[in-house]
Amino acid sequence: MRQQRHELSSGAGLILGAALLLGTVGPAQTLAGAPMNPAALGGWRLLVGGAVLAVLARRHLRTLLPAIRQGLARPLLICAAATGVFQAAFLYSTARTGAALATVVALGAAPVATGLIARTVNGERLTRTWSISTAAAVTGCALLLAPTGAGVDALGLLAALVSGVCYGLYAVHAKQMTTDHPDVHLPTVSALPLLLGAIPLLPWMATDTAALGRPVTLVLIAWLGLAATALAYWLLSAGIPSTSAATVGTLSLAEPLAASILGVFVLHEHLTPTAPLGSLLLMGGLAAACIPVARTRSAAESRDPQLPPDLEAISTASTAGTASTARTVGSTGHIGEADHGRLAR
Image (cartoon, helix red, strand yellow):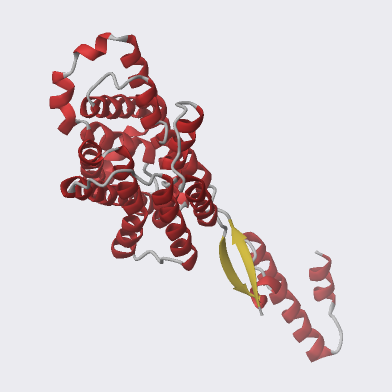
């Protein structure tokens, strides 16, 4: 007979919180009137967010050098490259295909790519719950953000797919860092990919400096850098260790849901006719991804729980003493005086 024991990953709530903050990026940019070139804005966002994370986690920096010498450099560089390429590819896709189609393709590909990469790199098992929740969430995302218009740009779609794969690479290798180097403070590690990811965007940042003189631009950069990057990546880094990489990819689909809700209630945008059904499917998929993991154990395990080491030693000594007394009684028919004294003690 086997009993089911359910455990809910505390990291799921942190991942959802990060996705909700990331979902404010588009609405915040729209609300501010898009005062800066998207590539330059993305660069400032990564630079500010990475710098804030580095300052907050500076006391953990000393643990990085030993870990880098022990193999941390490879996943760290992969995360840095994935961050920079994601930002550039997604912005390029948005410019060529529009925000709706770019978001559908990129975030729709992200959970699938994350699951497949996790399976290939870490041997992570893809459960039936993950498959069902991901299919529902991806379908809901497509219905929620169904683009209008017949024009489709092949290069834009390819760039969106690349950005989705980059998200998967980041999630899987960030998870690998927590597994292979548990003593490393992941928010500290996350600051480096953000700072390195801003480097490819420096040309746009250098040529669009006039917008920095406007207060609305500074407020937008502050929100994107502090809340939608530093805090979001801190939550993401805190949630990844206790959440599978495949589930992280699925929960990332809360981002378009948050963006759509803000679009309706803050920006007064109108949703497509398929949006309500898409929202329900998306929320159902996210809820399914948060279902507690079932762990099975036999009935024998439940009846004979393992004792802590100290209690186990006491139990062993007691058993040995009982056996010794039994042998004495069996051989003499009575308990001797020495045995009486030993038992009294």
